[in-house]
Length: 139
Image (tube, rainbow, N blue to C red):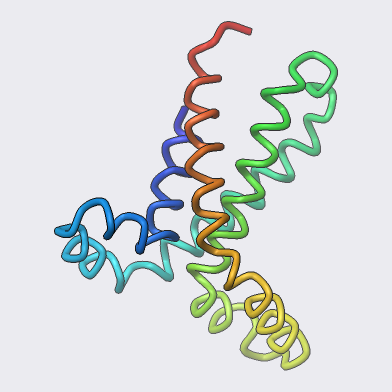
């Protein structure tokens, strides 16, 4: 359930235009969070990558719980991508500052993913809700 809640929160940060259209006073909250957006993105990127690795290591779950495993993998993948997009500045500063080839490749990846951020945020909301619902269902 924690994974689903965190994915929903990250998705809300990734889709500010959707949030602002529903709640006009949310702009103040988003402005307060903006200085920490890079750190939030970096943490979620690391957690998302860890979730992808965990689901690959737990590949045996696929035969017993295919829906849960697929939801967990897709949620972790979305979390890693959105975290990368939100934390790109810090990731670039800390991990890619010395290697110009890696920095250029990361910039290309960011340029490809940027137009899809809104769609990924909406998919993240749906997958996060599915993760929460699945956490209440018995195995």
